[in-house]
Length: 155
Image 1 (cartoon, rainbow, N blue to C red):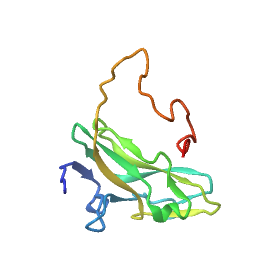
Image 2 (image 1 turned 120 degrees about the vertical axis):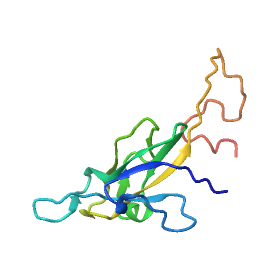
Image 3 (image 1 turned 45 degrees about the vertical axis):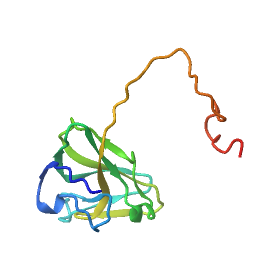
């Protein structure tokens, strides 16, 4: 099954429109929009344990009932560069610039150049919860109220 959800995008140039790199890709790649620095190049250095917010070069108009999720790229994660709040949720009522929060968890300096693929984007339907107030939770399970680390109980 293939859904094609129309999403309006305002990109600084065509290079910033997220791209699906293969026919089976679930997510579209987002590239870095790095302005010229004082040295005349378009790159940033992310120091170890540093967080950097990187512009994507675009904003979108997400249809009502949908969200965009921002996720890290596995190739960057193996180098210690992570999308900090992954998956990051962009709500349908946000129309500003898409920015990616990157965190260098490695011990090395990581260089991000203008146009580098830094994250990936998915669009997902949003399901709203109809909360039903109750005085007690009646469902009886083997796990019960056992919390963190308890999914293997009773095996």
